[in-house]
Length: 543
Image 1: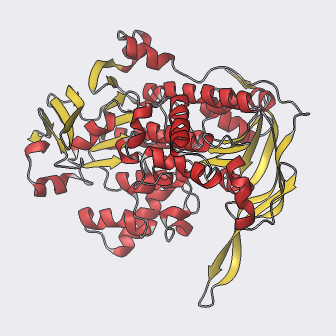
Image 2: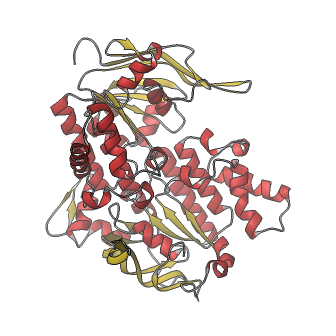
Image 3: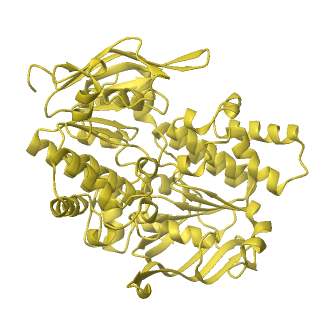
């Protein structure tokens, strides 16, 4: 580290004004980042982490957001006092940012090639060919398979993990001096997460790149950060060298974060329990069309001959890398995309039912999506969002009865019922995910597809949500299809597990068997990456 820090934040406060109400989101914080240093900003949702990071690039919604106090010095220049030309020179070139929610950060109307190439052409003056070559190099670096085929893809055509990797590629395009990474590996599977962290570490070594790393995953913090700042309620309550924070935490809140992790194990699977959802030889093939006549020349086999059984009161965990077909399988079972193969729900064949014929089943068959911001209407309040299903499926309820059910379900997911009159953008990422869970649970379903439901949540909230899902399952005998790249959460919740790769099941069985004695190299690699252990060639995973 040089004597003068690359970034120096001094007595920074951030306030939001809405009408006559003023909320202090960040309360007089100070910290430095040296050249080549990584500082982690950790804390639960709503603690002020992301707001602090957005202040560095002046990306907050001004004038609703203001800075009652503070200075942000980058290379000795106060960013808060700099003119717009100076800020434009810094943004995306000298300081880049990986945003938490790629679906809302990527332009839905532009291809991946155009979005990554834009920053290269703007800041580096590259031509089309040079920008294309650099884009392919970046996509390869961040682990996108067949990058040439993805150049013409739009964001909605990629999985959540693939979109996150595109965001990382955009941020790294100009090799910035300072990278602000806001939950950069949240949507990534464990093997790609390890690759991305290694890539960031390699760039840091070669380019002396500094990082402000924002995350709720303390396991990652210990791997990447030199120093840690712990935030809660807008204040930094503890800071210091990483090892010191983990081995000798001084503040009660820091100790709470370190201790938080999904605990417990699910009961053993009962093979005699009632089958709620069953799929036989499920196939979802996406045609690849080329030429003037748009003839089908090939297929992308998203799901290729998968058998699934989900029983009442039990959880089937579906794990695998991004793009393996996990979410596609879940959407097929929920009859949200077309598929081939037989699907039986509550003993009735539903694979040939039309959209209208499926409607009576929808209240009993619910989905919690991976991206809560994208799945919640920005024009509806929380109460309206949760009540929407009740209005459709239980039209006989009075307004008072609906409101009472909304209050009850918000309490169940650990949200203040008074917040039901607010809108999704007024909540943190973790809070929005809990709203999405509440929307599904309010209808008391029989089967729930949970697509990465804890990926946006803090560690302590993850544990609470796992406990909540377990409690709801026991109380209502619910069947869960739990899709996740977080194997620790899967181990805490799933009775049985299937491991998917390239649309096929490579291994399936009881959770204990999959985690304690995996039979395939792929499964062993996933578990080794998730639990920081080594996989032995004989199939036994050892500490």
